[in-house]
Length: 339
Image (tube, rainbow, N blue to C red):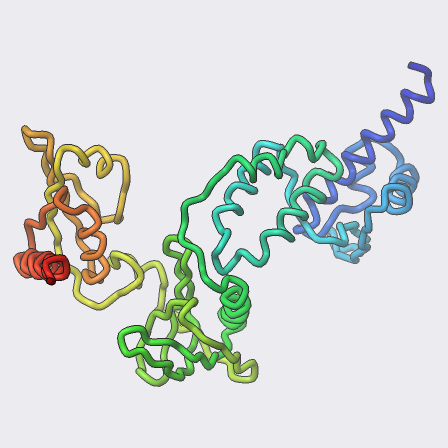
C-alpha cells in the first residue's frame, strides 16, 4: 500500500466515523467542530475540510445550529434528514420483521416507505444493503394474521387520531355501532390508543355519554379534528392503570376472580404464555391438568377467549360465568341441530 492510498483509506474511515458521530448526537443538538477535532485527534481546520467533503463529495446534507456551551455560543452540526440510530444488519433485520407484522393493519400504508428508509439510510454509510436481504426474507416469511379490508382508509383515520392525541384536540367521529347496525356521531377527547392483535382502539372521553369509551378504529367511518378546540388531558387519568384489570380493551367496572381448569393436553401452552398480568397457576393435578386463576373485568371479551379452547377448559368460578358458558354452549348446539 503506497502512502497516498493509506491516507485516503484513513481519511475515508474518519469521514464515516464523523458521519456516525453526528448521527448519534443529532437528537441531542449535534456536535461542534471542537468536539470532533478532540475526538479524532486532528485540527479544527481538518474537521472543516472533512465536513465540506461530507456535504459536497458524499452528498450528506448537514445543518448548522447555534447552541450555548459553558455560557458561550457555538455552532453544532446535525444531519438534515433527521436522526436514525446506527444498527447492525441483525438488528435492522429484526426491525424489518416487526414491520412485516403490520401488513394489513392501520400502519400498513407506511411500510414501503419505511422499508426503503431502512435500506437506504441505516446502511448507506456502514453496510452493504444486500446483508439485510429484504426481498429474500419477504418471500420466505408467511404471516397468518387478520387483515383490514381497507387498510389505507383506516390508516388515514389513524394518522388523524394520533395527531389529535398528541395535540389534545377534540375530534368529531362517525362511529359504526355493530350491535345496532347504525352510524352515530360523537365528539370525543382522545386519551390514548390500545393495540390488540394488530387492531387499534381509541380510548376517549365521549362528550355525548359523559364518560370514557373505547372505539375500534376500523369502525370509525370518518373523523374530523377540531384543531381550534383543545382540551386538557386529565392528570388523574393513566391509561395503563385504567386498563390494568381489563381482559381485553374494555373496562366495564367491577373485576372478578375467574378460576379455570385446563386439560393436560393444553396445560403446557398455559404455562408458556401469560394471558393477563393477574394470571396465577394455582394447582397442578395428578392427571396433568392445571387450575389457573385471573382477576379481571371485561368478562364479555374473556368469554370469547374461553370458547376458543372448546372442551379443553372448564370454568370453575364464578358460578354465574359457569352458567353463562353453559348457555352459550347450548345456543351453539341449537345452531347445528336446526333441521
